[in-house]
Image (cartoon, rainbow, N blue to C red; front, side):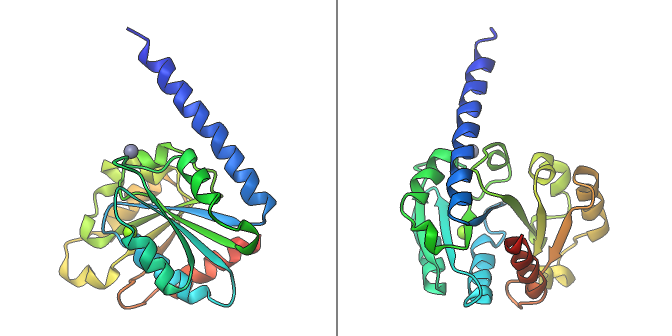
Length: 217
Ligand code: MG
Ligand code: ZN
């Protein structure tokens, strides 16, 4: 009856140990890294493109793209000017530390200042699997609705910053920003947020400035 729990704990323990190994490798090479999580279509890849273009000449960027299939996102990151590695998870709905380890092996980390890891689009399990990255960022978007912090609390609880994308759509969608923010505040008090639009570019500068400040630490 109770066999299941120890097995799951062992898997998570192994993942956390490997995440710590990944972190050591990143630290040794002086790489600052972030794990970008969001539901499908929230704008992870679009934000990555803005980030690559916005920080070009200031930082050397690399992108690791996790997807169930295709290399569309890594191709977009490469086209924007970053070194990009695609991880196809073969059906898995999240990245784990083993997958990131494999991706890190394909990068010359000494040539990288900032590593952006795009997780698989999913608001449930990515939050449970540490990768070894320094910070976790969640991207929410206006069309997803204002109730998402209430429905997916695990995702909002553990993150270091929240991007609220597609604010250009606010006039067209019933999205109660106060209700949304109350939900966020209850789960993650004082969480820094970046309302922005990857489409119009509004608000992107504040995100870039914050990211630059993080990497300088
Ligand atoms: Mg994407
Ligand atoms: Zn999963």
